Image (cartoon, rainbow, N blue to C red; front, side, top):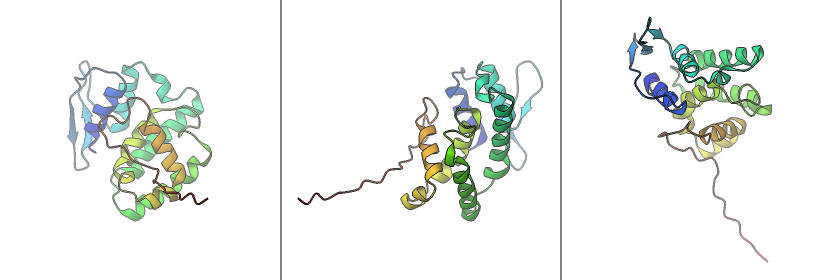
Length: 174
């Protein structure tokens, strides 16, 4: 998904009225937002943080100094590790690492839903949607986290629902 489309989804999930126009610059199509009263903003995470502040939902950036740092870490991870990777081996490694990390966490920062969860969800959607049932079971913690985020109010929007449960037929022999 193009960064501009993600930012439009984010705007809508934050309850912001549409109106921002995004352009892309360079070979990597880095998003650019021209603000009404100042210089343009460049980069997915920079623009996303700006939108969160514009919507007065700063809690999505973290509530403690540590949580803010963890959010920043995951936003950086999204841009440096997820974006631009379409190699299946890279994605497997990424999902394996993320699966280990999420073993004892509900959200990326632990117990609070943040911008990092939203942007990583958007960034991983194109990969998770193509996983087989067996692959989803292999990355159980990622699957749990992803399923939880996709059902968070206003986040998924028009993106396809990723199904995580396989229907099992049980015979009842009495």
